[in-house]
Amino acid sequence: MTALTLSTSSATTLRADAVVVGVAKGVKGPVVALGAEAMDKAFGGKLAAVLETLGASGGEGEVTKLPSASGIKAPVVLAVGLGDAPAKDEDFDAETLRRAAGSAARALAGTKKAAFALPLADVESAAAVAEGALLGAYAFTAYRGGEGKAAKGGDAGKSAPLAEVALLGGKPRDKAYKAAVERAEALAAEVNRARDLINIPSNDLTPKSFAAQAQAAAKEFGLSIEVLDEKALAKGGYGGLIGVGQGSENPPRLVKIAYRHSKASKTLALVGKGITYDSGGISLKPAGHNETMKCDMSGAAAVFAAVVAAAKLGLKVNVTGWLALAENMPSGSATRPGDVLRMYSGKTVEVLNTDAEGRLVLADALTRASEEKPDAIVDVATLTGAMVLALGNRTFGIMANDDAFRAALHEIAQEVGEQSWPMPMPVELRKGMDSPIADIANMGERAGGGLVAGLFLQEFVGEGITWAHLDIAGPAFHEGAPYGYTHKGGTGSAVRTLVRLAERTAAGDLG
Image 1 (cartoon, rainbow, N blue to C red):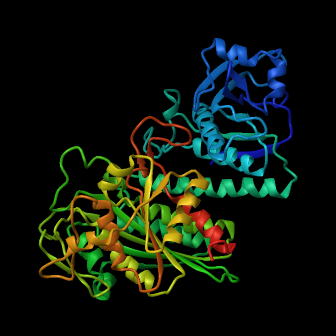
Image 2: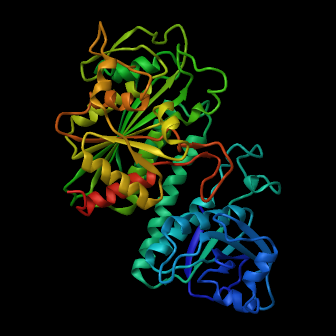
């Protein structure tokens, strides 16, 4: 991963390949942001005017490169837009800095070292710039060049990521700054772990190989792990996992990976949907909807990464991750529409649509997680297209059986820069899942389909346990042009929210 250091050096004297400065939209044109005073002086106080001549406006995410002025060691200046300049005595918010740093890091792909002279008002802004730069400096190159190496030359997407970031204005001897950078490094590494898993094609990432990656990480970070294979799942009565996975040559797995702290008083259970490929099963997806279905394990990737992050950060909270892994394929052995599955909870489910499979594997995992009586359960899943229609491609929905917990998760997501929105759970939609032959059907009314899915999952949460459901179907996989620190492909959506939830739980901020 990209190396990151705090530096007290001047932006003009530090030896680097490029210096990153911030530029904002002012009333009369672009203005150079704080942190770049020495650079502006080297340009005779006219850096903003030069940038305006080159077409820069200071708009958010805008990137402008120009040759350095005399007296600057780095040969290139990269100005990144911060959007509207804040009011007097106010600072740029963390997400603005995070995205700006990410945009700069992406633009500097193929560069060895860059000095970031963005405005660092405090520890929080330093953490945001560090996090954004590390997330922006990402590339998935495992399948390039025949040997898993980044291609030489070509566009930025095929270049090696920025190798080193020097964060100017930070305080290398200050414990708070050092801790903020270390947290950013741990967090970015785990978001990138999730991204890598999501980007691996399904012929290489199967339930078995996903479980193997979890086992390797457990060994490396001292986590406990248990893997139930198809025989153990059948013996244990995990009808949801078996039913979804029985049409594939790659059988399902249920992985329990747990971090424990000797002084922890609270336990979080995180449950992730891990469909390593979703064809829709017998209810086959239409043409044009299959190409990105390797990403249907994004929830499990987020949960896995969050557990490892908690261990790296040494959080004083117990965190258990449940990865419900299966491949949903059509074959002679696949579950058919109209079949009835007996779940791990003992409830029976009439399968009306085999493409509503995520809720079936999650149901088994939720029941199993509930048996351990955690203080709270959060499940994460690319669950419904309906949620994408409701909230778009960048925002995930939050449902919960506790209004305060739902509000806290929304607040946490906003705090870490992940777009979310609290969603209702209308009780009248439950009736649509009534089945004439089973306890419940896996489908209900078409209208409000994302909410119906949440109501289905709630049926499998243990009594008295606080629970929330994050439907990340929109933001989990980005198909458009890169922006900020977000690249094309897997995004690692929800990792930062889950880690911050664990931190706040450890600090006793959630009751």
